[in-house]
Image 1: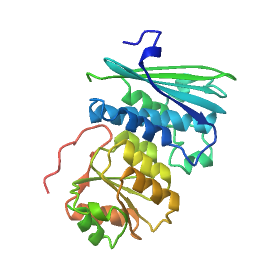
Image 2 (image 1 turned 90 degrees about the vertical axis):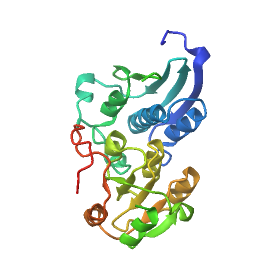
Image 3 (image 1 turned 90 degrees about the horizontal axis):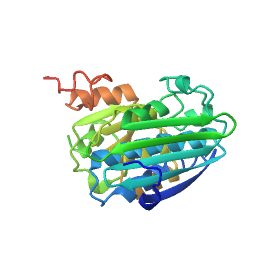
Image 4 (image 1 turned 135 degrees about the vertical axis):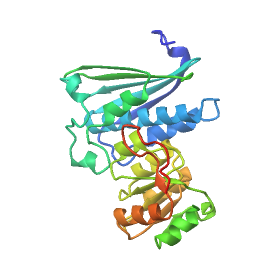
Amino acid sequence: MSGDDLSESLEGIYHIQGRDFVDAGIVSSEVKKSLQGKGIPESIIRRIAVITFEAEINIISYAQQGTIQLFIEPDAVIIEANDMGPGIADIDLALQEGYSTADDSIRELGFGAGMGLCNIRKFSDIFELTSEVGQGTHLKSIVKLNG
Amino acid sequence: MKLSEIRDLLNARVIVGEDKLDVEITTAFGADLMSDVLSFARSGCLLITGLSNPQAVRTAYALDIAAILVCRGKSLTDKFIEIARELGIPILWTRFIMFESCGRLFQEGLTGCIRKTDGTEEKTIVR
C-alpha cells in the first residue's frame, strides 16, 4: 500500500509559500476538486480535505515554504506534507490538543488553537510525523479507501 | 427547514445562493474556530459563524456544508463573496449575534449536527 516508491501514483504536487495567508485553504479546495469523479466516497474525500487543510495552514503559519503531495494508491490516498521551516522540537508536546505557538495572524484565520495536528491524526488511518529542528517537518497521512 | 425559512427567521440577507433557497437543512454547527468546524461539523449542516474570511468558505467546502450564516453583522469582503460563488456555498448574513441565531433556529427545530464532542448523544433529542 505505501511502499517507498510512490512516483507512479502521484496525483498532484502543491507548492505553498509561508505566510501567504490570503490564499490559505486553496490547496485543500484544489485537492478536493481533483479527487472528485474518481469513484472515491465523499466521506473519504472530506477526511482528505480536512487533513490537507490543516497541513496547509501549518506550512503557511510556520515554514518559509513547503509542498503537499497527493498520491492515489489502489487501496489508499496518501498525503505528504514537507516543509522548510523551524521544525518541531518536542513532537509529543505539539500533538497535545490545545498546545500552540501560533501568532495573531494565524488566529485571525480561524486557526492556531492547537488542534491542527490533532485533527490530522484524527482523520488519518496512519499518521507519521518527523521533524528536525532548523531543517523542517515531514508529515505523512494515509487514508484507506476501504474505510 | 428550507434555507429561505432560515433567512426569514433571522431577517437575513442572501449574499450568495438565491437559487438554492429551497435546500433543506436539518442540522447546524456554530463556531468561529475553523479547526473546531473541521473536527466536529458534519456534511449538509448550516455553519453559523462570525468569521467572514475566505477560510470559512473553504472550510465549508471541505466538509460539504450546505450553507454559511454569517452572524453579528460581520463585514464581508469581495474575496469572501467571490470564493463562495466559485465554490457554490450559499451565504446568509444577519445582524443577530451567534447565541440569538442558534437559539431562534433551535426553537424552530434545527438541531446540532453532533451533540457532544465525545460522540455520545448522537441521536436527535425528542422535543
